[in-house]
Image: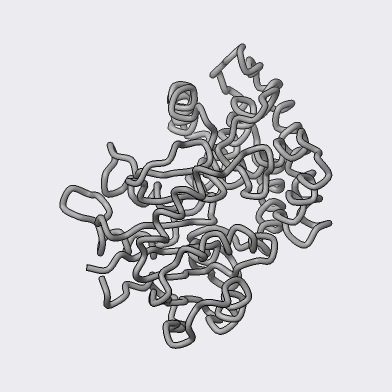
Length: 351
């Protein structure tokens, strides 16, 4: 039985669009400014419930006026994020710029705001449906990945985790990132970490439960329509998450770009070396091999077996092939298969 490794990028979470509007999955890099602007609009136009009674002195949310002040702060923060996206080729470019300029505080705050942004997007939209179909196909009876399937991901989203929770609400995938130790059993290794906050399973669960109970009670009193209730709930939660995780906090997100020199990635590379070294089939989905990842991509591919089969699944697979050849000159042409059908994640015949 062949060992199959999936190397995935942003295209694997792009989901579906309807007339340009996202209906599932996450925005692609060129869509991020628009989505940030949409969040700003929602923040401005969604009223704070006039009879909100949930209070938390620790977070400084003791009245409707406190919530309104906090909303203005969050609006300003997202306006800055929108500015960074608009003035640079991509938000990743801006992040790399901050690293090169050694602007550590700005860089960490950017990671926090991106974490908040992607958490909101994943609350607002359901995951890319391809993850659901894929897990339905590969999960074993005990709801684990087969031993011969592994994932190396450049994405910092939670699409796998969210989808997996629908199959196993009480279980967790074994995810490796820069903040975890080397483990040969990791089912997913995330080079850029995950867009979540480090203490999320502790303080988040406690505060959020009380918060959502209050919001639910407010909506059940008939103050808002169903559509208004959804917008109101998520916007209030966005403010809540900012106060809980970002204001006055430092370095508390699991998202960390691979080019962040402050986090040695030796154990990540150790995990990847182990996975790639035992790979018979490599399936590349939605990853473009951008230039500023090239150093790490070369480290990843240098341990690939000479006769490993490579499947490239993308809308434009030929472009990915050209980028792949620029990263690794040792890959044999006859071992590469191009796939332009992206309706479902590819399951190679070697499985």
